[in-house]
Length: 262
Image (cartoon, rainbow, N blue to C red; front, side, top):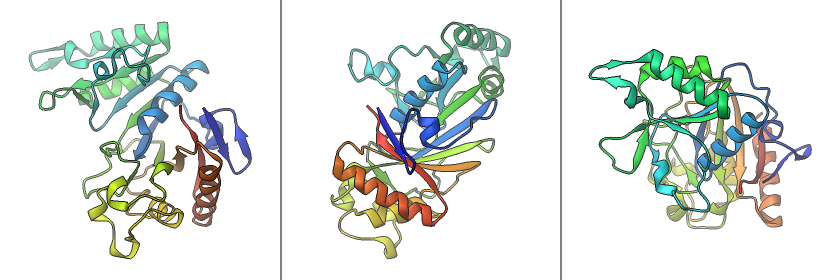
């Protein structure tokens, strides 16, 4: 994993994004092109630094079992808690869930908390509301994937997106640079929602910068401090593109970082 910002190469995601993580921080990830990779890499980084860290979602993710035996499993080694296990009928056993989460965080300092989606086999969704307060209390940092993109590297949010919690301290919007030079319809989630003034046949640096800076695009729903992460900058050409997009964002007062999450 290699990371940069305008100061040069950086040693960590937190440093690259020029952030100070507050106590019991809630971090929301939006956009497309690497949210899960950023979530798990950042969670491991925070865990390794001594912070008890939880990853979760406010939308849908592939069930962790989907990646079983996959060498690229993003959740490899991360214990998963399903809060519905602690529900007896209509009541939620808060104390039992809190004890289980505390025990896992004491042993591993990292956990995933999600619920199985009864309507979408193979998917997980946000844990029940009763679990939220426990998670925030027991964890030093919570990272939630708060947006969907159906595995496209670039997106414009639909009217109901993203799902950023009100208590969010930091919002990071992700964009995948693999979208550059490709047909808009092929690589952009919700391309049909893109304003006519921004529409073009192929994705270029100006479009990525404009979408990420837009209050109705990359900044939509953002709470707390806002940052952009340009992912998939895995060759010299894309590194140069990332730097130029960073300049576009900088004019708008938006701090950004870029790199390749592997």
